[in-house]
Length: 96
Image (cartoon, rainbow, N blue to C red; front, side, top):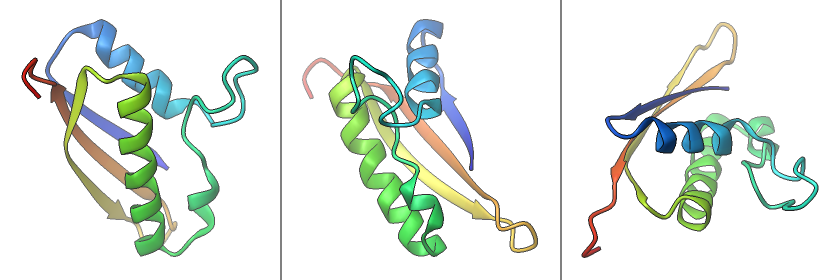
């Protein structure tokens, strides 16, 4: 799955987002929950989208609470079966 991140903010936060989303959950010895579970990849597209979105919200809230997800859209390539997730996010306001 390809992930496209739309974020107009600090490079440090962009790097944190990219690291979280490119790490497979269970692969970091000191924090097995860090990263995204890849089990959704074996599901039908509609189910995979829902599971990925839920996982994304939970993990972003836990590991990068300064970031707010604004939108997530999915694109599917029927020939290859590949899915692309476009994630738009921004810095969370202090009063949220």
